[in-house]
Image (cartoon, rainbow over all chains, first blue to last red):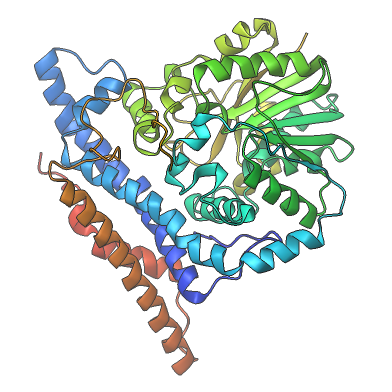
Length: 396
Length: 90
């Protein structure tokens, strides 16, 4: 259960802070493994039989599972602990974030002149889906709770390390690294020269694209300025020349056909259906012919059972991610089709975590393409091991 | 975090949020708050446990400094065992 970040903006934790963070990671592991298994057991042995007896059929979807489970003690126990554990994630990093404020600011200033642009727009209207809620129950969400903007990025960075229980790597870049490695191996002739990362937050999954394609110009955009300021400093401290710009994914301020790869990770489920459609249209517009739109996301509800759909959609209702289920109700191929991509140009895959299974495991999956289907057994929180779901389309 | 209306999922079942807009799982909202306090307390007890482990390692260097993650798992399993779903009773 390692929670220590290994990049250059990692905090120097006191023993008490380390202990507190370790506890939260351990608690989350207990909830997501033991209590989740208990809830499944309660559903199979108690809730489902009662539902079938009453309605004459099993729940048809995750919403019906949710309603059926709501009153069960196993659901209540799992849920009330998960919500509080999520709040404790952010609480557990708050003291170190505050204590190291000056050191962080000084360190960021020291690298400010290194290559890599940071463009923030003081007049930018941050959309309501970010300002009106504490996304992931993070106090202040992506725009921060006031004070030093770098605090917000540090809170997200350090909190994500606790939250992820080590599954995202010690630079929190496992998703980006796994996806970039998969693409580079599966499409060796694809050599993107310009790469855009949408909704990049602190750029943790942006940097792997620069590592995989060192000659490419890599740009990360986000609507929230604090994360971008932190992302820029974080990238420079790691010697990565990556540019960050405050911008909305549905209104890209880039010319037509100006990118070879448009990427996002765990982003689409945080935007409304309207923004989602506009984001896909914009991604297609800025792609060059032969370019690739690629998204790492949660697998869709159509590819899993009602219980498993409910289980993943829990975050929609209780973790301040109101668009989560609406996104997962969408069919990824249809989203691409609606944006003008051809069905023949659609791709989807599941890649193993490079941090856990290594590069060879990704090569093996590519060699056996098609044998690892996208479903609840291979992706998401219910999966055996850690794998990431990707989908997208080539621009004709 | 702001006075703006908090968007909620369009198909959220009725009654899953309390008057403050936060999730509510028990009929009596005091129970939700009590659980939160209990988890905070368990966390603080664990912090003290790590302090003791550190002191013991200092006082008795030959004693192996135990793997904290292993000790923590045993701690959590012990403290939270009453929350586990009984098996084999259905």
